[in-house]
Amino acid sequence: MGFELDRFDGDVDPDLKCALCHKVLEDPLTTPCGHVFCAGCVLPWVVQEGSCPARCRGRLSAKELNHVLPLKRLILKLDIKCAHAARGCGRVVKLQELPEHLERCDFALQARLGALHKALKKEALRAGKREKSLVAQLAAAQLELQMTALRYQKKFTEYSARLDSLSRCVAAPPGGKGEETKSLTLVLHRDSGSLGFNIIGGRPCVDNQDGSSSEGIFVSKIVDSGPAAKEGGLQIHDRIIEVCERWLVSGETACHPPWPGSPRDV
Image (tube, rainbow, N blue to C red; front, side, top):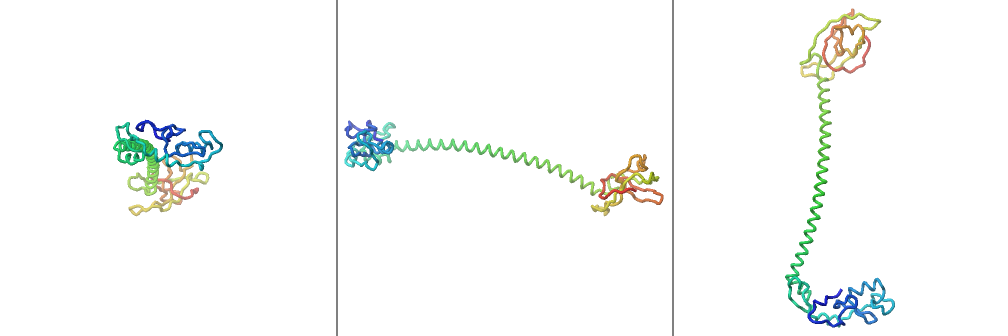
């Protein structure tokens, strides 16, 4: 693309203008048919259309375009205003000196700083949005982690309570501290070959601090309406202390869990 006409001091020769953009030629290229255009104007045209912009001949390729160095040197000697004249720069320099002037121009520096500030502000906005998104994701993950921790803590509390309860039941000996026990002597008469209860053989499982162990023979089941089910008779979990020849049963009544083993009829 060429240079704007109003940036030059005085009138510009029409031969120095591009036939496409109608501005002062920038890096002029000529076609085999003699037409001159800006390099930035004619190259895209030829690549796309494959012909001269003036429509004066047939096919044209980019290889057939040539630089016009004498014309370019003439244009570079024209006086041109600074590109930042609208911002207040009043310098007029030769076109060939313009790049050097723009490197030192205070108004050009202000323009670059303004563009940089605008770009940084735009990037800061994008970074702020990304930060908010990441914070929201982190908060959601933290909440999910807390909920998961609460669920596992609840399960752990439940399991701990169950284990404590089982440990207390397993570790507590019959007639141990804190339990109300009493000794009974019962006389049971066999009814149809059965005394009406099952027993289970206990074995040591946990040694207590007092040196005792949870072992013995315990009542595991009482048959309804049987001899053992009479009022004041045996109860489930009673420990059998002694069995006499006449089926005299001495026992201790205590609250404890069933002990392992296989029940058998007596």
